[in-house]
Image 1 (tube, each protein chain N blue to C red):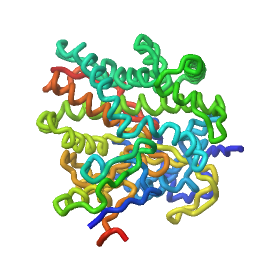
Image 2 (tube, rainbow over the protein chains, first blue to last red):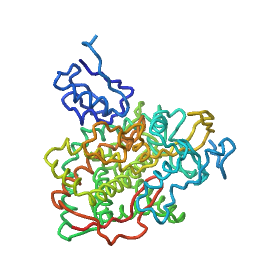
Image 3 (tube, rainbow over the protein chains, first blue to last red):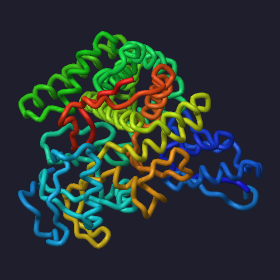
Image 4 (cartoon, chains in turn yellow, green):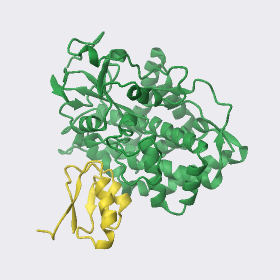
Length: 68
Length: 405
């Protein structure tokens, strides 16, 4: 599974980085999400899902399959 | 552009959506300013209602509507949104303008407030917290607002703006007048003083730039390589002053007021002193429950929103405390759950105007609380509190909070 971000929706709350720094960080210019590990390992699934549910802008989603 | 002033509820507002509600007014029996907002829900106020008070304005009471208003700047603008309507009022940069104009100063400021930039401020914040708390830890008590919650963010502001610590008393006096005075003459003189201070500051940073925020702003250039209009530079400094002091002071005061009454919460935070991410998660819940800001918007054109008719220049208040306890969005919303799993609070707003200082504010509160609990692990409310210390308005809070240990 992989996680994708809509950067137009991201406003830099950085809740994802707080909740799952293994997968999410933020950039130094606008403070928007950077997905360090789009295809995350199964042991991180719970944390990634929590980060997705805690995005106040709904800018993250989990997609099935590999990067197209 | 002209702004219309309504002496009473205007004709487009139906009778059944009118309530008499003054969010600046604190009745004598109110011990916590948020009570006046949650009282509206208890008495069954419509989710979108109109009050003729303070120049007349709408109030939104549902998370979903408040969130939509935050995101929809095409209807709900921050430009000239002051309540009661005030003219002239400075156009704060970037908060007082909407996208795409908003993006100019937002992008200029953004790198200085990213999580990465704020992490670099940690040492400065830490030593300020240590210094302030050790100054009174041996006294057995303090007035939290006076001795800590006002000084900490104001001192941080001075540091970030490259101003010397000796100016703290001056800035405390200026900000206290700005945020608390209700005397129109005093307020007018205070505004002039703030502008003089900012003018002098930016001129000095233009001559002798450092690495601080004021120097960065004054040295910035637009897309064509020209300096920004001087008024915009001053009003950007003004915004950071307005947005970063009183909000942090009052959020801290709310947080300490709660912790003083909950041994269980103090214990939970002490248990997390060595686990910053768990500590931060618990802070997030205190951010949800202690949302001090009531945010203003101005309607840009006649339109219908959620079945209600709005007219151009109608004012709207978005009370974050109400959104953050909406049972449609939060499970068990009145319970403070320091392990809350899903917490999409709107304490820092949403959408393009999301509080740019949110990461700094959270870090200020987190570092302060960590240091406080190391030096003062147990504390309680001093029963000898000042009467009438609560206030309402765009930022709610307390003028005094006496603690003892």
